[in-house]
Image (cartoon, rainbow, N blue to C red):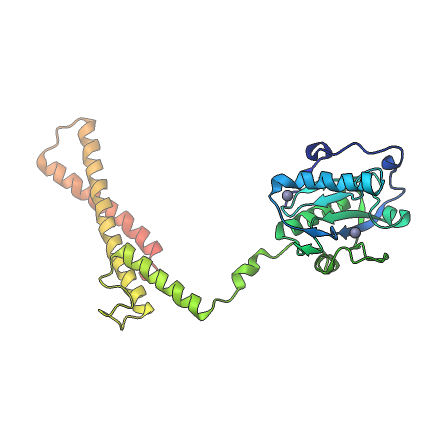
Length: 288
Ligand SMILES: [Zn+2]
Ligand SMILES: [Zn+2]
């Protein structure tokens, strides 16, 4: 995953107050602490995310009286990482000066109600932010939440469990492991049969009263045979085309061929094309 960093100018950040907003970390960071919004939040189109980050900054500067947005970085549900105080300037989100100086503060835009679970894109974005902090900060490998060493529910149970498990990238293959219900399997089988019937022109449709005894296997078997027949026809057609183009090119080279020579050339071309196609068929046909 490539870090999708949104700079302060890109999200329209206000300038921070000095001198407090310019305070740098006094040493290397131990690691990264995660946060959530702790308020109701509903997911929204990405076009509205920058405005939401500006709103957080306004709340921190005008409501809390801080010199800038408190977080080091903010991760939206679409996986974008907004630069808050960034890598160098000390954050003000972890609870007190000691805690702020100790770890970076990364907010995931997830609520305590409404949207309470981070999205897969967001977890990837948070992982990107953690790696960015480690590589460019630098930060050590410690990972935790706002609640570590401070009395708060932040970052919520879902994010806390994830970060304490080492903040792994989400497993996108898990959807494939979801078992199908019997009804879904039946529907899927009918769909496949329909497609095979439509494409290859099987004489009867699976499950009709004309031939109720057909099983999915017999459909598949028949479809395979139809497909093999079609392939043989296609092969002959391609051979004919190959033969004709051979004749045409000889005629174009100077002409003067007799009818017998044209016939012989066509047959030779057809044999050569058939032999070539036969090799291809042997390579690709599991039945052959
Ligand atoms: Zn927090
Ligand atoms: Zn977004």
